[in-house]
Image 1 (cartoon, rainbow, N blue to C red):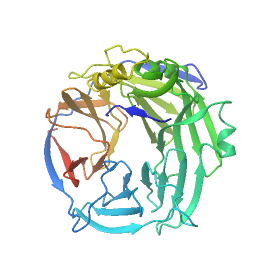
Image 2 (tube, one colour; image 1 turned 90 degrees about the vertical axis):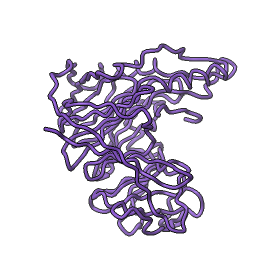
Image 3 (cartoon, rainbow, N blue to C red; image 1 turned 45 degrees about the vertical axis):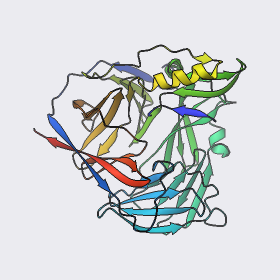
Length: 373
């Protein structure tokens, strides 16, 4: 899918489905402090062209590995304990340890030390010495293709399990105007894949506006991102335009949902926009207006405090919400209006790190929660 703008930004296979009403809130009082820290890169200039979106942090939180897409491609190893660039590891495009592409969209590090590089359709695993172990193409592997209905494809909204052995994604039609049709789970170890059709996902298409060239050919689209998370044998997913979360249990094939409430933000993206336009000027205007609509972020697990954090934006507000480890909403606070949510956010030592580009140097704005009870 080309030229797509991201906002920042059930009936089906499951054997049973249930809708949860907003749960009675538990109260967890907390405040948030913000500070800004800088990474010392010495004489080097860190690669910030993609806002650190092509990066991944080590499970112990000590390092951030930032992929440099510009040639020569490399891994920039940032020490998060002393906030410095520790080293730069050159990588290869071709050969036995070649990545095959410089368009890496995400890096995932496993507890065993493996590196997993994803570019949307290619998943490559390297060992802790950066020797290539395997490469899979999500659009070409027979064990994946045979699980998909004819004419369908895996979409770019993806999540990978902690050990790197499974991948979850949405699937649907080939065209930009096609809706999501369900979730697919790929098991690389077992060389197997399984789909979970969900008709309810087609309703998400109402939040998308597509620019049709000559009123016929899809050229561009703007829509709220979909959030995906793998936790054990569960897939947790949502769309940023709704304060509603889906839970898919892979053991029982059951789907449940939970609708949350916020005292600060809208429950859904409220303004109704046309689903298609054929004038580029109108499309750009709608794109700007959609940036002011509510956007619920993904869940981020805080190992130290054993809670999940989620950041929500609705211009000009930013809200930080805390959830228990079993996804009960515990509390929320309104952040400073100057807070901007970048594409790179992660948790380290009980704090939320958000990337800030200042004169092409790497800074992190840290949100530091303080619990009162």
